[in-house]
Length: 273
Image (cartoon, rainbow, N blue to C red):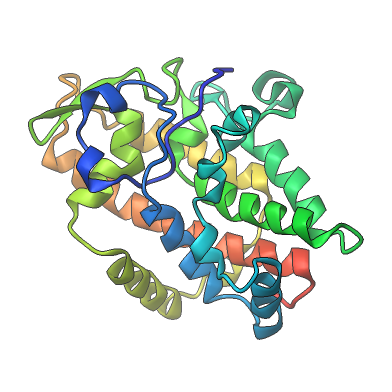
């Protein structure tokens, strides 16, 4: 498994969007908080009042959307956490095998399990539970980015150089942020759109369930069936590729928010909806 931290799910600072030197590898840079904040805002809207209050107590008055990128911010100080943001499962593999895919428990699946256990344990100090909450908020967002779960020997798409809108980038960065930012919507607009979508759908309860492994394999299969399968041989990203990616990206944000909300409810003892 690669040793370097991977770019954060679906977010980037506008000034850095197309900087090839930064986008060419698994960068130590912390990208902007947009995508993680969207997932956290959706989750926040799903929390019961008691659980929302408890999260703010643990976070010293902050909402979960305020700390959604904290796990990136501390990676320089604690480099070992870099491998907690993803799990590399080859797209030719059809299942998750911990001994192969999460050696030394250094992957997002093991990290979520460990941090959920701390968050759920009321005998732990509030400081430890607050850190665990911050990790959970971030990592559940991360694992819904397809290239944080599936790859084909290319560091989750980081080694695949592509051209998008006339500029050089890589496939992972494209799915982290490039496509989303090219669509021209603000975070608030996306949150409203997805919240409205939640209100119209009848499968929300079912989507909120599942395990971290099943959520990861869902992302893995999207990496196989959409991210790589639709990739043009020329590696020049076409409008058709973006059109196919857009609903997938929005659905990953929606499901990430639903599942994050459900996970926090379980950990802090509130009812699920």
